[in-house]
Image 1: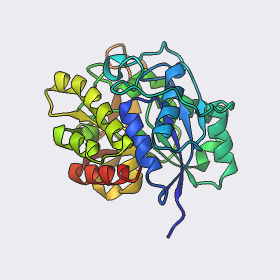
Image 2: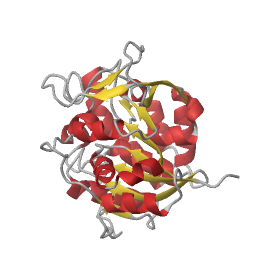
Image 3: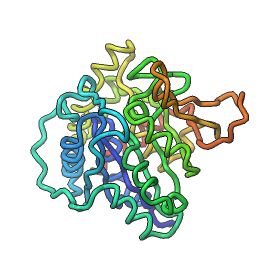
Image 4: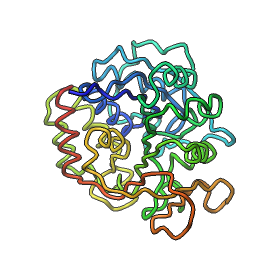
Length: 314
């Protein structure tokens, strides 16, 4: 059996981030989680690093190191999403304050250190929030860019366009300058946009399947998704909430669940109207070189089968 893929999860938890982290923690045969790096996004940094540790404790995986990173975007004021995730970022169930210690090293230094420590092409960066930490690491230590196996990120949109502005998806909008650095870096890049995540909706039956696992983890995930879904159901009139971030981990575990195209994707950083837009050349109408595998479709039933069966392990 091949050795597990080494990953770092860069995140701003967020209920859907939490489910993604749990999916990774439940898959040790395939994924070796070197650490979790927290960034400001859904809620401020002071909450995201606390939430990351709470999630590890839910899964009884208290040996995973958690690092605090950048508390603001590269050039802009922080925009957060308490209107979606609640004031803690993990509203839906009351969890105790984490006992796990926060690591002293800055998240950006940890990313640089791990990419230099491990063999080139052996560490994958899983970005579930704004790209501030990763862009800062690339800017500070350009030698690590060629050592990254792949950056797999949840962000952007093409057919679905925007969820925080008419043109932009939240993670990219919060720090478009960081996104532009990552998308322009030449790193191998796989993107899970809203076009995919809006196809993996937690409806009542799927939430009940989490609760029916009977474990504390299953009940916690059900409570998170019940809270999370109220916003999207009201906004989109959908049957449930999209589980955005777990698509990143699912891609690493079962890429055959997904379909997409290798295309050019540019980030708008200037326009007041379309700031943070992922300008995806899906139809190949420009001569700009392809830089990202942009995922467009997913087997939703297979995705939820994978997710539920893995959560049952915790």
